[in-house]
Amino acid sequence: MVLQAAPVGEAVMERCEGSVKAHSGHQSTGGGSIPAPSLHYWFGETEEAQRLVEKFHYSRRWPSNVQFIVTAHLDGGLFGNKGEAVGAVVYSIPPTRWSVPVLELSRLVRAGSVRFQLSALVGMSVRRLRRSGDVSILVSFADWTQGHHGGIYQACGWKYNGQRDKAMDGLVIDGAFVPGRSANSRFGTRSPALLKGRGIEAEPHWDEGKHLYWLAWGDGMKAATDAGLKSMPYPKPGEKL
Image (tube, rainbow, N blue to C red; front, side, top):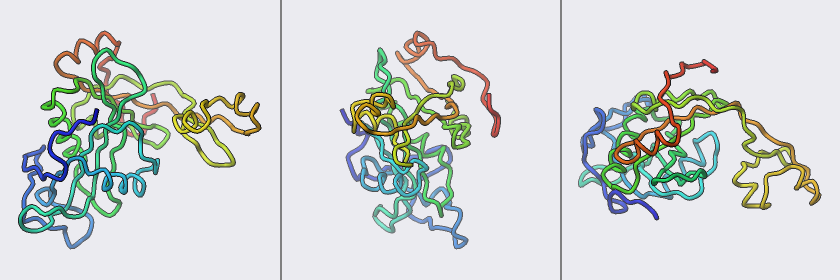
């Protein structure tokens, strides 16, 4: 089930945490900052989002089971034409089963030469998902292995559940990292021992523990409580809990 809050390719004019889609904004000549009014938000632009993820996201990998995408574009001129994609937020089906529909914010990315508030992009996506009525809990993991503490989720008012213990997030095969899901897909297992039995040398790869953030509304609030999700004080940059 792919959630589409607006028809594919439709530009949406909407105020979003201080960011307003307009036709008069342009990139600053300094090349670093984009005034908020110069951004347009589009839905369902898979190719644009995938290009950004594979070029600018630290994982360089497109997630599986993608359900909802919002991309931020520069002003494309008159008549709401779509300009260059400079940011994307991607939601997927999480591997954990829930009693109510849940989506995981699995990728959040911005072009390396452009600066704008990613919190506005996240805020836009959340409002659209809430309106859809198809989901009532969102979760996301800030990867401490990459030095991420979840500042964007804090700015968006998401609740913090704490930091998970270190976990084996994949394998190292022939010197290359293979994510756990990719290993399961390719080999049917992520177990180094089982792979060794097939003649494949694989070493386990461990992360440093990820920060879990979540957001819920409606029936999702009770489901989140029943699932044991907590609301804890936010971690600070550089603080390992």
